[in-house]
Image (cartoon, rainbow, N blue to C red; front, side):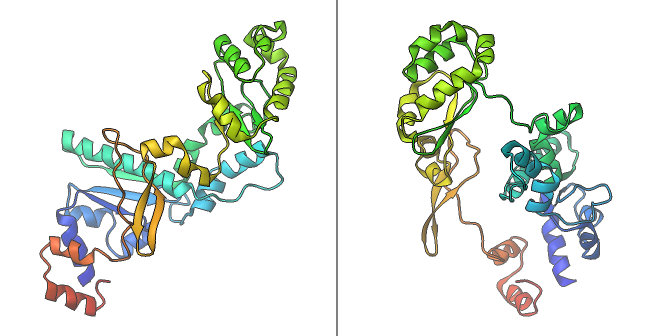
Length: 320
């Protein structure tokens, strides 16, 4: 009870209350919406959940691998696209993506309160985020099972190519403009293909896709990926190497934008990805994530709890 009173005292002057506890636990410990709003009617109440605040599974927990990756259909879409017998294993994307979307919701609620005086309840969930991210496949499923997930016919400017060293690069020249086509042929050392009547128009390139892809397969297989990165750096169309995680550390775009930064940890320097939002083209150096209860004393000090009282609360087991 004493710990709950401390929580309520913090709530009195807070802008946002954020929780990922399940509904029954929030009620049991008396920090559900009704209890928090009784202390601060203007606070923005934010809930992160597995399956959303409504429906038969609103009371159930959720995890990245189960709720986001599998129930949210991403694992299945990847399985069909890759043509493998079993779904791909979880990759730990759901927590981060759901957190980012929820952060956007919190900012929107703060703006609404500042401009209208009205407060909000903000909900974000693993399942909702998965459905949003896999939207193209979910939308197209209305018109035929696996329309988006089924591998489509290869196209000379929209295809995955393997290089000499067993690496891959993907071309995504969706507009398939004639100048991009000519530029692509030039960079691959085959300018003659740009004026070949078989490939004169985008429609022609679809009809004769197998022939063009076969030629490009042979050309791209003659050099390593590192060589093609240099050769294709000046192309007009869009393409990308299939990079390994370790290669992102040295990617010039990663370095230029500061997407990965050095953080000093107890055991030395660690390179960590940082939130991808820049303000005035700068993201800032990230602080370390706090240890458990690291800032308890500092936070309680903000509501006037003195040193002796903090020591007593800790000794009594009220705070960590």
